[in-house]
Amino acid sequence: MPQNSSDALSKSEVEMELPNQTIHSLGVKLEEMVEQILKARGYSTKTRQKLEGNSGALHEIDVLATKEEKLLAVECKNYSEARTVGIKEIRDFQSKIQDLPQIGNAMFVTNAYFSSEAQTYANHNRITLMEGEKLKDEFYLMKLGRYQSPQEMVLELALPLSMSYGQATRVELVNPLAVRISHVTLVLRPYFLFSYKVDTKKSIFRRGAGIHEEGIRIVDALEGKILTPTENLHPISQSYTFFTKSEFHPRDADQILRDLEENQLIWDLKIIKPQYNYKIESRQYAVVKLESKVPIDAARRMVKEEIMEENRAKYDEVKIYDKSTSIYVPKWIVNIEAKDKVYAREILAASSTVLIDEISLCPKEFFARFRSSKKQTYAVCETCGGAYCSKHIRRRNNNSYFCEDHA
Image (cartoon, rainbow, N blue to C red; front, side, top):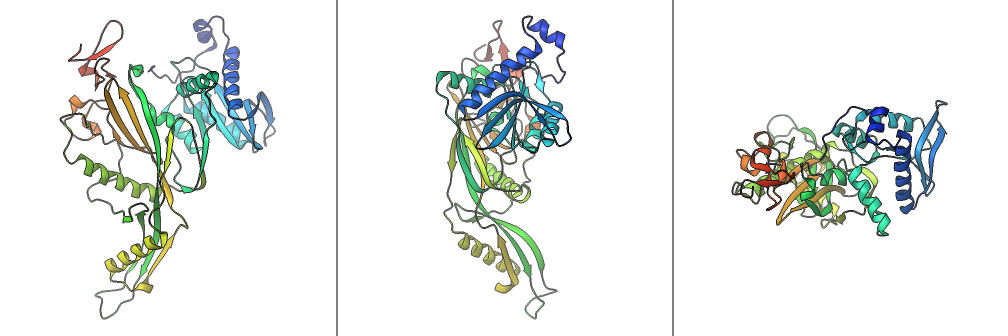
């Protein structure tokens, strides 16, 4: 993968790299490419349209697309692959969109890559990002006549995705062509969220003053289990990675992973605001929507009985408040193949929390379970598919990489 740089390329640098091209012609080529993709999606399009904003200023939109009476504004940046689109470009585009109330949706497209700060800012402002790899894939399928419009799914209530398909499937290696994404699934699992209030009165049967307490309880709508945080395990701030193909795989890894995921789910459902009628468009990956198996009334009763027992409270001393439906929590499940090895990756998509990523860290540096004690994967062996850090991988003259056993 190319090294990222936040420095802007000057006009002279672009012309030195591509002597027969100009900045304008490069931009037009990308705009035309994006226009073809949007037309394949069912949009009607116009390029380089000037719109007057609330401020009275004129703003040029690279591609203006219309579908079902909704306007989509697209910004296109055709950069060298060594260039990364930073937060400044996204912020400039966002300020333009804010001055144009007629624009319903916004998209930023580049043939290069986006910085992590740009991705975070774009997600917060609901700007769809399309970077080089996805752009190539969509254009390739369109040219082959295999392009399919994304299938739309509308969830009544769900935590929104903060991690896109492109981010979930990105592999940070110096030889990324040595791996392939073999299977990607977005799993949508339902949960019930109950707010409660306990207000008990002092009586001869209770010691001390009455109890006044408010809180939240979460129920897994598939298993009917009330989620409870595990002591000494905090929400995940960094990836917690297990190498299932390594002799160093901890014996209690599966249970620890379940506990960590449950703790993080509790945190996400309490902190992240769910969205009503949330739309998910899928074409490059499978979407599995799991349906609730526990009636919400039964889950509410279960929560109330638990709170009553914990506080020795009477029935009318416990009040339960809940959403009218289950809340879906999205989770990415990705399989990455390298020769005969398959690496697993699981990510809670609403908080971008990596639960497991078997390809990201070198197994030969497995001195402790947490990321801070291990080294990042640098390349995969092109003979066996093993993923190793720079210390345990060798490069040959033809820029191929091999592990110590196959060097």
